[in-house]
Image (cartoon, rainbow, N blue to C red; front, side, top):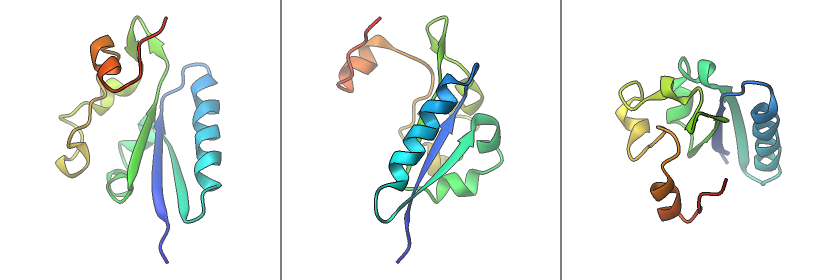
Length: 106
């Protein structure tokens, strides 16, 4: 039986987000039948096939000046259409976060 791949793509300025991404990876690996693929944003840009074969992609990044850092290099125009359908990685929009059920908190 093949495993369900969950990709975790992150940008970390000082190592805090990397630790969070590693914790998410650990949690994924505790689920029977799941495997985690941990990639930095830079690594992800050369691993489109691995991302395309993933069942889910989790993005993690710190915020600088109100936007998610490091994810601008993964803008919609760079993501293959087979991966990027419905994907938004342009930063924190308070109304969009609220609509997704995650109220914005300072």
